[in-house]
Image (tube, rainbow, N blue to C red; front, side, top):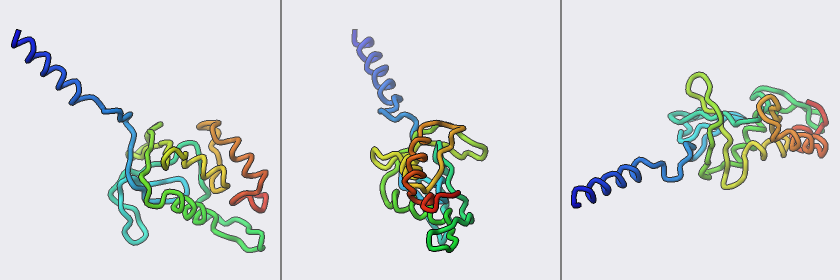
Length: 161
C-alpha cells in the first residue's frame, strides 16, 4: 500500500512538473523593434541594433521597406518604412509582448501572431495603414487594409502605394 502511494505521488509529481502550465509554446517578453514587421523578443537595443533575442516576423503582414519612399500630402517624399517602424515602437513601447508561433523560417526566425495584452499587433499595423495585409498567408487582415485605404489612414493618406 505504501509503495503504491509513493509510486502514485511520484507519477503525479512528474505529470505536474512536466506539464506546460498553460504555456502553448508561445514566446513572451519585451520587444525591440527591428523594422515595421519584425521584432526581437527578449533582446536589447545597443546603439541602433537589436541583439541577443529571438527574431519574430509578424504573421500575416508586410511592412513597407525601411528605405522605401512614399509621397506625403505636403508633396515631399517620406521614408514610410521608418515611419512604420516608429509606429510599431509606439505600440509595443515597454509592454510585455505575447507571441503565438505560426511557423519558422531559415535561421531560427519565428513567424508569429503577437499581442500587447489582447491587442493583435499585426491588425493594429494594417488597420492604421502602417503595413499591408499578406493575403498569401492569411485573409485575417485584408478587410482592415481595405478600410485603412478607404479612410486614407497612415501610408494610404495619399491614396497610392
